[in-house]
Length: 253
Image 1 (spheres, helix red, strand yellow):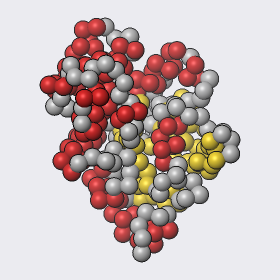
Image 2 (cartoon, helix red, strand yellow):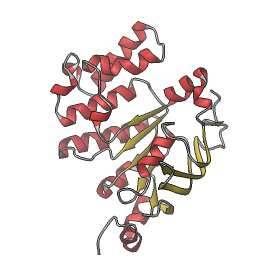
Image 3 (tube, helix red, strand yellow):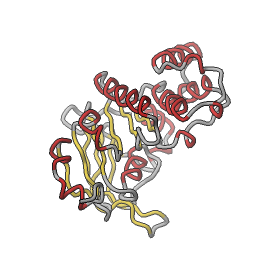
Image 4 (tube, helix red, strand yellow):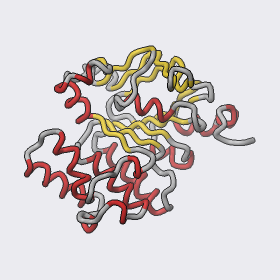
């Protein structure tokens, strides 16, 4: 898979529309550029299209209209059927789902974190090194041989993140990363996202956690309830615009 030129966005969505079952609109004429090293937060009420856009960026859904380019190449259903292209794309984009239950499925934590690198075809010793490094970085080495169903919600979140980080992707997608977490785990996760971005990762996240936006994002993209982007700007500017937030049903006035 080719790399994008220095002046081209890392990810580019152009005039994309998508409807579930061909009838239920989720995205309507959405365009978005994400540049290398950015932290972009997608804001909006439930059902506005944030999660759908993340799935499109991860190649899990494909638009009914418009185009999506990543790393300088078109991402389509056909292109992802090419094994070499798919391997390159999947290794460079990682998606942490809102619900860890949807993501964690292996018999043990160690096997869960090893799953992605093994499917990339990495040598066994490299896979083991990545697993050990990821367990240590996330502070879950002591959970390595536990079954995921035995873990708390916060522990499952760490494992889900670990399964993505073991792939060492360039782009990290997070769907409501701090939702349903206790305050200590929320703080840990915000700090981790900041640290990962400082280490060179590009981050796109969907969030209702307005309080963490100044730490989590450089730029906010605001969706209306009719599935369009209606505003974007720095977190401080967006948070100060009460009329905007009220208009998209993120705050009540």
